[in-house]
Image 1 (tube, one colour):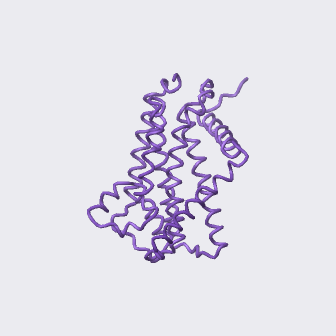
Image 2 (spheres, one colour):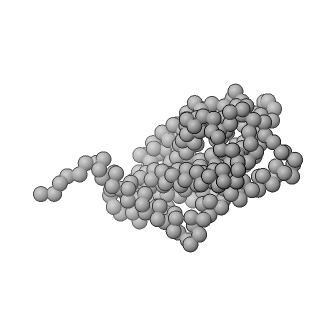
Length: 261
């Protein structure tokens, strides 16, 4: 007699298989796929440090300039990469929907989880490399760093859930989103301390949830970093939870259509 598997065990088996499949493809899609995971943040860090040198910005109040740049980039890349990769998850796994156990939302959730894990590993490697170069890696509040990093990843997941549905309905969505993330890169405080932005423009910048996460991340790293009062982890997690809720609601509403497309 065939044993009946519970829904939880089936879901776990699907997620495990999808995770392994995505990991193999992500790291072996080309001969240097794994190398580019490291080179992208390193190139960006080098570029911004050169920019700092050209504008004679030798220091950041309360923070080491190199670590200031690293924390901003690693935090932003975590949110951005999770959103981008999750947005394309359904298109990349269309053939798997022939198996009734595999749902479109499974591919998005698993790809987001993999991207979060990869970005965490990349961040640890980059920071370890910085430590070998003599940069002080002392963390003021490890718990705040973890909470901020997790919040940025959840924002990426929420956006990915919504955008994955939109991307199936309209093919142009992916191009528009990637274009919009370019100015978002500059207004997320990656390249400058938000303290230097005067009011009321600073309040406008803080409508961006990524800025809250990046500033909180820096506040956890640096003991003397001035964390502006507008920074709010509640806002970061509120945005994440709202986007995740609406993303899951869209997947439930259009579940059959996503498979049929």
